[in-house]
Image (cartoon, rainbow, N blue to C red; front, side, top):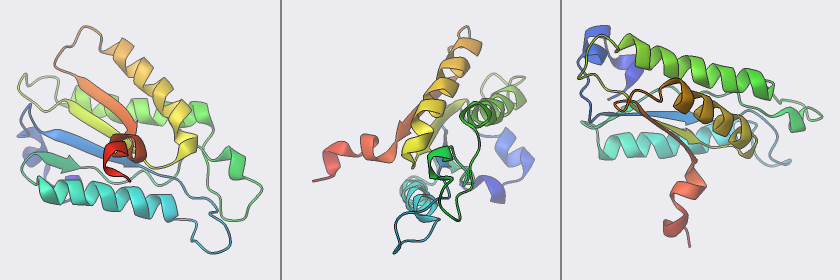
Length: 157
């Protein structure tokens, strides 16, 4: 299921076992030979393949294409958010998803932030820590953050 193609009643009808998958990327240089959207293309493709493999279980959010890339500011084409703002964006989006379903006990509240950029690891982990603390009394809320190369480490030769 694709979040952007769903109506709000469709989203409201998601079940607790649905997984909301949120690809996180960046826009930055990757040498002279690759486009600045490389991280975006990679993590989006991986997330789309996961959704296609499990279309009744996975709900694919739009990729967050701007990440924490301050270390790439010296290169043309880098778009970046400061780490604290990036972390806040993750917290706010996840909070909005959780709280919009708060009135319905059976609503989907499982979310995986699938990272595709090394610079997002620290602020993504910080966001996850804040989210865990905020929803510490909500066992129905399950949120995780991982990078695709960590999640797929055993499958990558």
